[in-house]
Length: 246
Image (cartoon, rainbow, N blue to C red; front, side, top):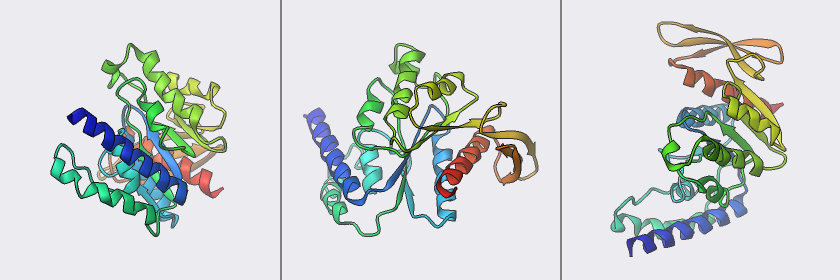
């Protein structure tokens, strides 16, 4: 009975979310990968807001078959409480009539089992797709790395035909996805050949100074945090900004 109720809720939220997207037509930026999704999501959202663009992103990590529609509808989860779901269900319908819907949605996509990506792409049609990295972190649900990689390849294949794929050049498996992409591709990373390359990283007392090379032009950036994952998030944010403003 519990399984049946979950499926009813799942498809109810799915089709309400699809209807809301059809009405409001926001530009969707989808972020997938084994690591770093939340930092990339936050960096892209910050970049868009600095450009004066209205944007909303997943709260927490609402990136599954139920979480993704909740993120689109900007609704909380009832988690495992029947009573907590009761007020959420009617609020979903009201989202159809929402005013001031954001122009951009920055959405994480979670993949832990075969078919997850295919299902999530029945809900959204991303204009920009980002693949942060692919590691063995969620490999237990798959027969091997090739099957896991296939999930992310599907995201690149199913993106909007006029869109952009932002891919990790430092990961060989992700780099090869450019060969199956029918949309424009921009690479980020530390390796020579990346379109957005961090050529120099210096740590200070309060963060990092990053020299970024794009089209043989270098620019300096400050990050008030430590770690390569924040450097990668910066590179992706710059790629998104360039695509939308140039």
